[in-house]
Length: 519
Image 1 (cartoon, rainbow, N blue to C red):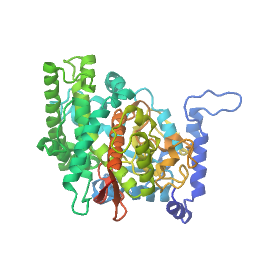
Image 2: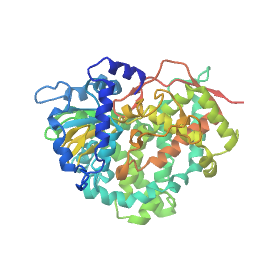
Image 3: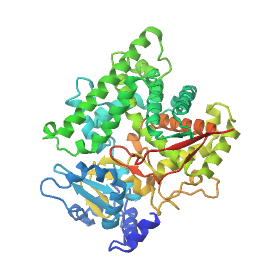
């Protein structure tokens, strides 16, 4: 917990010591349910649950009859400042609190110990609560585009789909196969930078260009096609704009009860945007598949491997490629923006990275698999930036059994959100949590910090439903930082940038960077 939050806690009835007591009590409980009672008085899951405080006593802000706290999710200003809101909730209520919607509660947890217990009890078919909206829309309004919700489904349908794509997506070599292609796309990106810098060598806001890079990168990796978004292709610009909008609408659309959703304007707008995105992307994927039938152009690509495994008649390759294109724009683009911001505002760390680049690759060399394996500081910069500014506020699960979190009963079927942002910026888990210290992740460095609990920092999720595209996203982030720092000394001279959590987390101000060419 940072010093400001610690100070606030000390002034309220919910003290920091109380938080620690609750947290320690929770962590002392069994992390895995279903233990057997023995003569040493081991507590069973049933006994632990019976002794816990009832779910009804979990603290919550004031809510209105019928609509509960729905207005929060309809208020763009509050969504934008969600990080501050959850700090306030933690300060007032402690490590666990809930909000009410007409059709369900959302339970928020802020401790790594509760996160560990939540994940350890998720079962064979973990259910991501936030994906319910995606699944419902695809099964209903978008069934003309998607024969299956794919990885956005739940239960056995999700498990069967994931089993087909898991190996090709998660194998380390799968992403590294594209190092040369990523290098070429970064060359395009540098040309774009040179075309948009002003006379002071500044770019007013680099974030949009990073979205364009992300879509070009995903296109090459997943459908074997360079979409030329960086060069200004119209279809690329349209996809980027519509995906941005879909994330902006997601929280508000998801708060609408399914029973009345089709009558609510924000939900109808969301469905139309998703239909537009699906139509555009599916057309590009199908085009690539048809081309492959003629010239084998997808040989070695992810889409090509999935076609080889599943066959041309299967929709699995089509849906997986379409999801990769849509999901990787804002996620990677915004994460890359924060990474550049952190390097620009920490010139000492930027210089260490530059020296590592010179040592491993040289002033003009190209990234290779061997060089990347040696670049520990580059990888640490990416990891530290995501700790400080995660583009996802947290991750969600629906409890698959009765469990105890922070001393409270949490019944089966509850929508739980682990607020990862608070854990990742908490002094209890990270020393100097408000500082950009990549060294904390490097074993052997004096500043290396051993995590007290690994569940305090899981930006890509954890377990069988961890982000399936994380290896590709990391490669993109490595290439952005490597190529730009190799070529430029970047700097930022403006007000502090925070996170805007309308949709996915993004910079809350224009990221105006200066790109000075290195000698």
